[in-house]
Image (cartoon, rainbow, N blue to C red):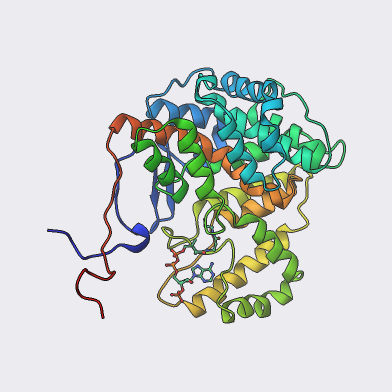
Length: 367
Ligand code: COA
C-alpha cells in the first residue's frame, strides 16, 4: 500500500547509511571521517582529510598529495581540449563542461579529478582576468591552487604560507556534509550504474544553486550593500519585509549556528593574526549579530542561524579570490566528499528511486 505522506524536500528522510560524515543539526556538531570538524580543520591538511574519506569509502588512500598534484598536471596537459570549458562565462559551468570534456578512461585515478577541478577553477579565473595559463607545481593542493589563482586575483607579492593554510582550512571544512543536495545528486547518478564523471557533473549542477553553494558571493554583495554596521538593521528588515532570504543564514539541518561558521571565522582571525587583515570581518560580525536578531524576531518557532557561507565569503575575500569564483572553490573542496560518496553508493549497488504522490487528473474524471 502506497503511503500518502509526502516529504517535500525529503527533510528528515534517511536514505542511506554512510561512514563519511554525520551532521547533528540540534547539537551543531559535524563529524567528518571520525573527527569533529574543529579538530579536522585544525590538524589535517585537505589531502589528509581526502585520504581519510577515501579510505572509509574503500578507495586507494595513499600518496594523496602526489595524486592530486598529478590531476592538476593532467588538466594542464589537456588544456587544448579543455578550451571550451575555459571559454565559459560562469566558473561553475566551466567546471561542469570540463568534466564533460574529460574521458572516463583518462581519469585513471579518481583523486586526479580533485586536482583537475582545482586547476580548471584557477585557470578559468586567470582567463577571466586576461592572464595566460600557468603550469601547476607539486606543492600542496591549496597552496598551488591559490598560487594559480593568485596572479589573477591578488596583488603582486601578496602570497604567503598563511594564505595557503587559510585556503587549506576552507577546503577541509567543506569537504563533506552528510546528505546535502549535491552529494545526494552525485549518489543518485552513481546509483544508476553511471560513471564517476557524470555523477560529479550532476553534483556540480546542484552546488551551483544559490540555496546550496551559490550563497557566498551574494553574502559579500549583502555586506557591500549594508556598508556600515549601523545600516544593518534597516537593510535586513527590508529584506525580510520584501520576503527575500538573507544569504549565509538558515539551514535545512542546523537549528543552531553551523559549526563550520566558527571554524571559518577562526581561520579569518588566524589570517588577521598573521597580518592579513580583512576589511570586511568587523562588518560581517556586526551584520551576523543583527541578522540573527531579525530572523529570531520574524521566525520565533524556527531557529535560523548563521551557515557556512557567511564566513566563507569573508575568508575567500580575504584570500584575494574574486566573489564570482567562490562557488567554484567550494566545489574544489567538496569534490573529494562527492568521490567518496560515489564509491560508497556504487559499493551498495542499490538504485535510488523514490516515489511521488500523483495529484493530477485521473482518466474519466475530468469536466
Ligand atoms: N532568510 C530569510 N528567511 C529565511 C531564511 C533566510 N536565510 N532561511 C529560511 N527562511 C525562511 C523561509 O523562507 C521560510 O519562511 P516561510 O515559512 O515564511 O516560507 C522559513 O524561514 C522556514 O524555512 P526553512 O524550512 O527553515 O528553510 P529551508 O530548510 O527550506 O531552507 C535554506 C534552508 C538554506 C535553503 C534557507 O535557509 C536559505 O535559503 N538560506 C539562504 C541561502 C543560503 O545561505 N544558502 C546556503 C546554505 S548552506
